[in-house]
Image 1 (spheres, rainbow, N blue to C red):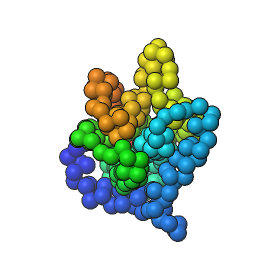
Image 2: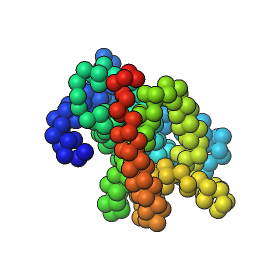
Image 3: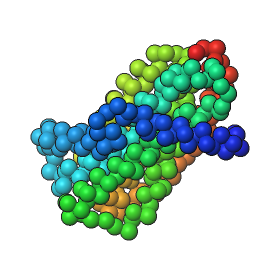
Image 4: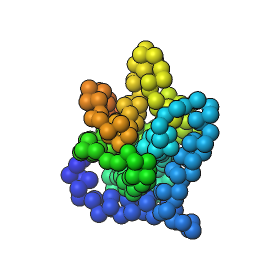
Amino acid sequence: MLKELYQYRQLLKSNVRKEIRGKYKGSFLGVLWSFVNPLLMTLVYAIVFPFLLKSSQPHYTTFIVIAVLPWTWFTTTISQGTSTILANGGIIKKVYFPREILPISVVTSGLVNFLISCLIIAIFLICSGIGFSPYLVFLPIVIILQYMFQLGLILITSAINVYVRDAEYIINFFVSMLFYATPVLYSMSMFPGWVQKILRLNPMTTIIESYRNIFYYQTAPDFMMLGFVFIVSIVVLWLGFVIFKKLEKGFAEEL
């Protein structure tokens, strides 16, 4: 499979560029929406939620933006990735290429947008006086784990969505609910230990907390929990490829 992906590497590159450019095609601001969208979301949360949650978190806006950006990458990837096979049905029926290029392109284009939007985090860290720390060296580990986890998920969801068209709506609803079970707007310290243990079953909880440890608290991430996320990501990624390869045989017929 890796050999085949390497042979079609130029198509993968072209598809990633298409995903990045096509997302904002025809819009006035173009790729600047990668900055504007998370900023607008952060502004709303920063105004509303301190009153709702009675939060006294220092530099709350910075606290939020550090979590909103990776969460936006997650939700965008799941939403676009789940429908990517259906959206490219016409090409799939006419031309052969490794079908997994489509989900890989979605996650990779999302990664590029996320890395660009990380400039927002840098600006908030500087303006808030928090600054940067040597623990930034651990950032690539967290990004790679999130990439693996998301790729595994959309390999599964994109394949299932071809056969069960309602899957897209069910998955988007589930992701919306998952937002409240992920510490994007709040700190885990708000909850007793048993609640924290339940929330940590969600891999995105550890991923979001790791970003906050590196950027906000300026400490090393919890490597024991990252090890758990690594195992989960490997299992999900393996299952994703197995399910995808099993179901792709009927893609052309179903489409």
